[in-house]
Length: 135
Image (cartoon, rainbow, N blue to C red):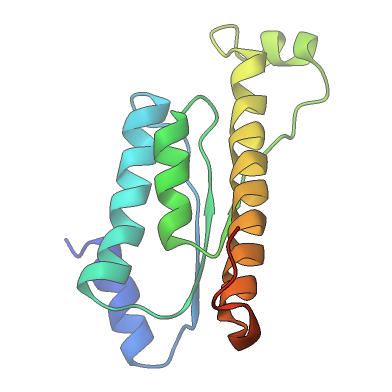
């Protein structure tokens, strides 16, 4: 059976795709699933030099570190929040924790804010007139 990485690269080399949107249902547990997703995009970037656009869906309940690692390899991260209320979630899946759905959003928001600060610093030092400046 051909793996997702190999399949993506094969289509990419044939110019059949330019981008990848990676999402998953939860397998075993959120961290296990998120680790697998991160492994796919890391292999695509680091091993196979995939230069297409990648968007990855964060898995609700996955650790902050895994969500941050996904951001190293993907242009965009997102998370599904398709639940109207905590009560409805309990009716659909009593084992699911409502708060775990919102944690990835906070992790992504924090990463966006940090990235914005990093970009400001980079632009400041990239300007030749600021090279000798001290922050």
